[in-house]
Length: 245
Length: 245
View 1 (cartoon, rainbow over the protein chains, first blue to last red):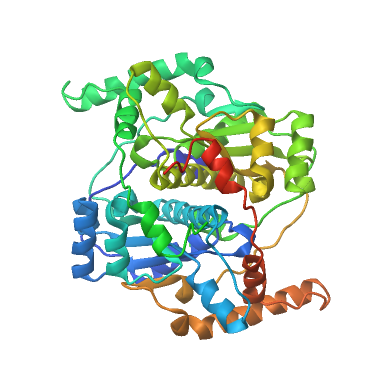
View 2: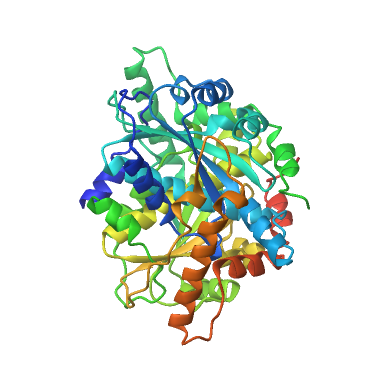
C-alpha cells in the first residue's frame, strides 16, 4: 500500500482545531487541488466560498447547530453554480437552461469531486477536515447569509484546520457488500457480511460509550432514514432556478 | 507542494489503456480507498459495480458512445443506493423514505466522494482514469443491463487502467473566479479573469487542432448548456423510487 492509499484509508473527521489559521497560500493550494478534479464536460459548475466574517460564521453555526462551524478552522462552503454560465450566456445572446434533473446532478457531482480533492489535499498537509451537510438544515438562510444568486445553492460546508483532537477511523461496510460484479447483488447475498458489520459497529459504539450506546449500523441508518428531513430543499432549489421541469 | 498535491494537480483523463488488467488485490485496494471517503450520517448510500462481462461492456458502450467504455481498462459503475437500507428497514419493520430531494443529494454526494477517492487512489498507483457521465445518455438501459433494483440508479462510470497515452492537464478557471470570500462575487467582479482564461483555452484548442478548433471556454460551456440533454433522467429517478415528492 503506498503513502497516498494510506492517507485515504486513514481519514477520520476532525471537529476541533487549534487557533492556528490557514494562510492565504494554503487556501490557494487547497482550492487549486480541488479544481484539478474531473469536471463534467469542462463545465466547472461550482464555486467555493471561504467564510471568515465572524457574524456570518455565527449565523451558519445556527443553521448547522454544530459548534465547529463557528469555532477555529477555515470554513469552506461548496456551492453548485450555473450563475456564471447564465451571465456568460446572456452576454452571448445564447440561452442556456439548467433546470433539468441532469443539470442538478452535474452541479452536485462537480462540487463533490472538487470537495473530496480539497479534503485529500488538506489531509496530505496534516490538516483535518469535516464535511458539514447540516448547512442544508436551512438552505434558504445560507443563501441569504452568503448572498447566493439565481443558479446557485449551497451543497455542504467543510471545515479544515490544524487538528486539536485525534479523531478515529470509522469502519466501513464490508468490501463485498459495496462492490458487486456485473449485476447488482440484493441484500440476501450480502446479508451475512452486513450482520457481521452490524456486530462490529455495535461493539465499537458500546466500547466508546461504556455500554450506553447500543446500536448497530443498520439500526442507526434505518432510524435516521425513518425521519423525513429537510423537506424544504426541493422548493429552495426551484426558487434558485433548478428542477423547473 | 507535497507529493499528494502534485498528484492531484497532475490529473488528466486517460482514455486509452494497455491490455494489462487490474488484479483482484488492486480492485479491492481501490474500492476500500473509495469507501474511506466521508459519508453523510454514515449512510454509505452507494454501490460500485465492476463490469467485466464483455456483452455488458459492449451494451454500456452503446449507451455511452465512448469506445473506452468497452476497451481495455476496468469499468466501475457508481450507483446511488438506498435499496440496501430499504431491505434492512423491512426486516426491522421500520419504514424509511428516500424520495426527497435531500435524499437524492445525499446519494449523489456519497457516491461522488467515494469515486473521487478511487480516482486519486488509482492515480497514486500510476493508473489512469476517466469518468463516464455519458452512461446517463440512457439511464434506463444501464439499469436493465446491470439489473439495478428500486432505490438505486447509475450515477456515472469510471474506467481505470494502465495508461497507453499521455493525456494532458486541462487548465481550470482562475482561482479568483472560483474562490470567493464571505459572499458570492457576481460575474462582473470576475469578468477580466474569465476573459483571460477564455483566451488561454482558445489558444490551447487552436494549438492542438492546427487552428481548426476556435472556441473559448465560455463558448464551449454555453453551447453545451444551450442543448437540453437527458430529459428522461427525472422520470427514471422517479421510477426507481426517488423524487416522489
